[in-house]
Amino acid sequence: AGTGHMPPKSRKRARRLGIVAAVLAFVVIAYVSSSQYEDVHVNEGAAFEVEEKITTNSVESPSTSLVHHDDDSHRAADDADVVPDTTTVDSDARRDAVDTGSATTPVASSSSSSSSSKPVTPSERRRSLKLSGFVPLEHFEANGDVVKWGQDHIVADAAACHDACVALKDKGCNAWVFCPSEGGCGSQKYKCCWLKKQARPWTLLGGRGAHVPWTSGGIYEQDDPTGGDPDPSRKFHVLLTTNNAVYQAWQARVMYYHYKKQKALQGPNGQMGGFTRILHDSSDGLEDEIPTCRVDRLQDELGFVVLSRPWAFEQFFAKCPEIEEDYILMAEPDHLYIKPIPNLMSGNNPAAFPFFYIVPHDQPDILRRFLPGITDEEMFDIDPIGSSPTFIHKNDLKRLAPVWNNMSVALQSDPPAKKAWGWVIEMYGYALAAYKMGIAHDLRPQLQSQPPWDTEIGDFLSIHFTYGMDYDASGKATPGKVGEWRFDKRSYSHTYPPKHLPAPPAGMKNDLVRVLIDAINEASAALPNWGMYRGNNITGTFH
Image 1 (cartoon, rainbow, N blue to C red):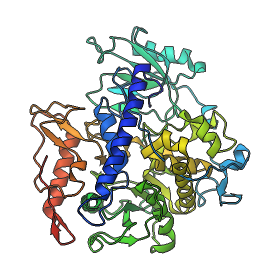
Image 2: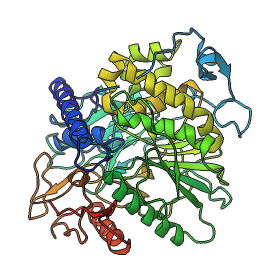
Image 3: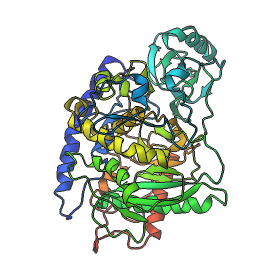
Image 4: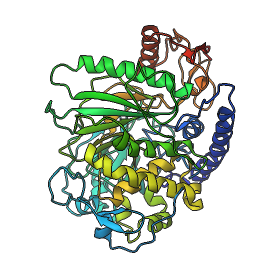
């Protein structure tokens, strides 16, 4: 995924959008920080989410990453903090080392609580792949860097497209995308065939749903996409981080309401355990409603409020009551659970949602400075993830959190990294820190949906409502244009959403948007004192 496979004009457009988004995000931070509500802070991630709104409203879905359209522009990038580790170590030592500030210390590879054997790296897996045969997936568009452009690559059928990829496997092809529609697929021709390369071809990533006209597939055997182990003893504890802003308060209340609802529905063998909100700020008055542990805000956030997030996780293990569960699900306030959540970890391997815009190998110079000794091939081993939603063993998170914190601050302090990764720099901090420590994550796309780009519930477990949702009166989506009906959480940065949010237009064909609005309305109707913040009613209006 990403802009690497876009036409040159689209790449330039995506970069320009990133710059504009960064400037606007900075303005939003300044505005919210000077809000009339004392001590109201920007959402950890609000700056990035403003950028998300701009970049995604310009065109296509981050999930589908439709690389074939001239308007496809999805790469988020902008601003960042600490000094890169310049210690020279070989690749194996680096993968098993923790930066203590003065030396490297060997640690156990990926879950300290699991076996002592070293996990297989993605690089090693790529060298031992097995061909799978022809397995087409309808209404699915595989992501990936382009191996062979498809505008004029016309083949007989999907099987021929698969075979063309097999023929180019030595050139890196491991995923194919075929247009089976006689009317074409968007601007692309009937029977055109795109050949692509994914970093982890055993977990095929891309966009799916009835609205996706493409048929895609891989050429190698696939891992079980569901993952996990249903053993009821493998319960996990949800850890949510927030500051005390109104913006985060109402989202956290909605999230916790639906966490409790889904936990009640899971039955006696469910794996949802406890819940703790890590509040890295002064009190917001919700401690009696949501189980909360207060920790310190990072003393110097270097102009980026999200840097308090890894610092909060580091403090959790020193200042908060010990949890009984072995496993943790890291979460954020704009995650809404729509089904009982299973533990998606296989053994003790962490499992995380893959983000299309986390593409570490696009910045090799930065990686070489912060991960000395890394090879070009190993750059593709860095997980395309952030810290959330992520399942991880608590022992792994305990040793990872300080490295993640240090890495994030180091990246934010580094001008080239700050320029390249901007408002997602804390996410890159997590991915680089995990790689440095030899902690590899399995990828679980079903962990969350991202409407309006995702439209069907399918096997999704949650909704990440970070993108603006705009529709005209007939229910047609209007990306890039404020709709006659719209929901955007940023409209409620200083207020609660009103009760009884209006339903989307009857003609709108997006089940996830409907579920989201119904879920917020359900929570606002059930929760006491909706709209109250520090004794004041600050309920907003729908707009």
